[in-house]
Image 1 (cartoon, rainbow, N blue to C red):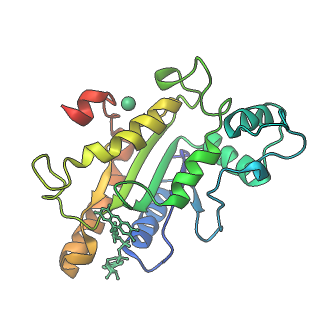
Image 2 (image 1 turned 60 degrees about the vertical axis):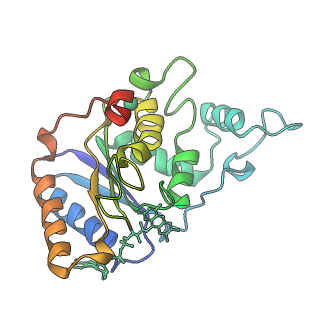
Length: 229
Ligand code: FAD
Ligand code: ZN
């Protein structure tokens, strides 16, 4: 109770399966006494593009634009655009970050990738000598909850898509672990569009059940072996 959760949600349709998974998480965690915040990226018309507009006021180098350098400098002087400052505040306050989205091209939807690109600025989420276990967002956990079009069989080691863990490597290790955030087991709902109504209900119940004991979970050992062994 009292734990703070930020759910970053990337689906256009509230009636979608992802929408149902989001509502379940908000309801269950709220019921537990958690303080839940949702960033509903499409509803917010979240800007996914990393551009000059993210810097307010003067450029560190006005002759040649470098997004990484400019956002780092802007972060230090409090010159990031207000939408980024707001998302960073939500991240800073959260104990747990949940990402809820449909798998797009073996990855996250562009709007969510844009959130990662723009919010996790150098100086805020990591720094030159502060990455991975030393990342600046230490003390937080993350959970990738997503749906697929493909079946579980397709996303197995011998399957056509390969082990689903391969697609988790950039997201969990390359982003969250890089920033010092612990990673909980992902939550994957396979092919909700192509299963029976009964199976869909089962998947939603499984999510509710998992959330009930979420705070007792240990993070995964987020290292190359977890993904590729
Ligand atoms: P929906 O279609 O919204 O939901 C499925 C069904 O569940 C619907 O009939 C809905 O009405 C129903 N439902 C919703 N709520 C409930 C409820 N409470 N109880 C019972 N039923 C409910 N897939 C891959 O595997 N790999 C890829 O690389 C990939 N790339 C993609 C790229 C793009 C650009 C796109 C558009 C899709 C891609 N997909 C891929 C497929 C995509 O991942 C799936 O379409 C998506 O995950 C399905 O989730 P959804 O929430 O949109 O499903
Ligand atoms: Zn890792």
